[in-house]
Image (cartoon, rainbow, N blue to C red; front, side, top):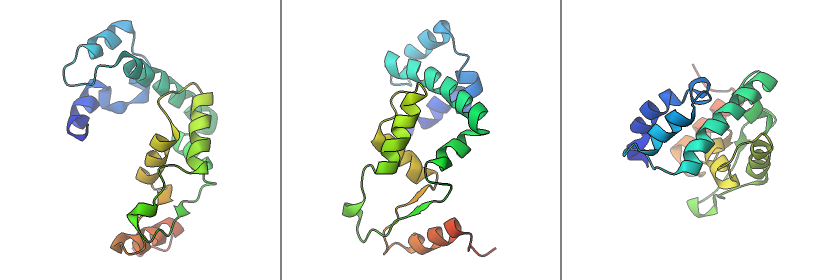
Length: 147
């Protein structure tokens, strides 16, 4: 899937939610015959529906980021996992985020994918305590990073 990322970026207009939200049935059909994509109708239609939901959430909260960060009270969770085997696939916060996104009309946004999103955008510091990045990321998250 990661090898297809650039193709997806081009096919979905740079993941711009304003553009994707305007996709009509003809555009969806064109994506469904694109050999560089996983051609699953439900997922392609979901991308359009989710883009529309992102725009609504931006309108309601000022930005999609503001909505997301509201799920962790605006502060990243600083976990202290000694080993990779202890990292969860989901948490109560990711369960709540998943439920909120679904209540706004999104789909394919289960708790596990939401937790991966939370990790990737810095809402959760899941570097293990023996990782050289753990302390540095914790400092960044607390505003103590050096310039």
